[in-house]
Length: 279
Image 1 (cartoon, helix red, strand yellow):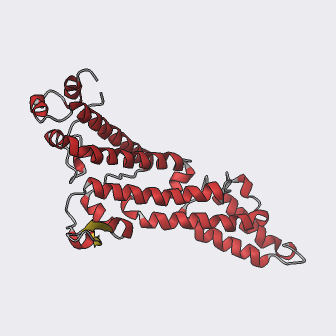
Image 2 (cartoon, rainbow, N blue to C red):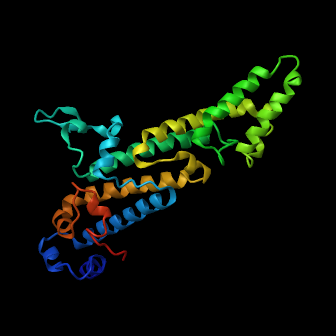
Image 3 (tube, helix red, strand yellow):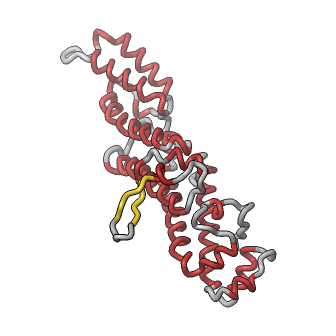
């Protein structure tokens, strides 16, 4: 990078006094790299929001609701005796306090872990799910009830012979719910597979409930085949945030002049607060 000061001016705009940045003695080259990571982080956040309506750059109020998740609520601090102690953020912060970059990293880490657990099920246990293209959370219980009914109606020796009318009615209703899930029909032949597959959707429902504060809808993600891309963008955001934190000590004064604060993640994502051009 031959002229980092010139590039920095393009990134931040002409309203900044770049001589002040230079007088800090910090590496302007590192400042440029860090601000470019912020731009990439903003893009990943926007992709997640545009694709699935999930804004992971949460407000203080939303973050306070997420403290019901223990992995986000409890943080480890080292006291004066160099002992590690677990602290509850519910007890140490107010609902309106800014969300720090560290807080946001905790959200992304736990969100990735939960999404990855579903991805692992799809990879290892349910590689070819029958209903994934049309499934919705509110259909789990009705489908489970139809499957239970079919299991009761099936005779060991006679099969469904004496209950064909009721079976056909159930299958017709099932086809109306899942018209494009052709591998799942007729239900009398696939109900055991569907019954096992429902465990996947119950897991999705549990995760949705856990992340209700950010509006996660895993069924939408799965219907659109977007789980891998969502995982990738959540992971990228986490990595980029870590890069910002890691480089912060060496360019702390310059990032402060630019308006980037580790204690308030809004400084990374609010373009009205800190304008960063993609150069």
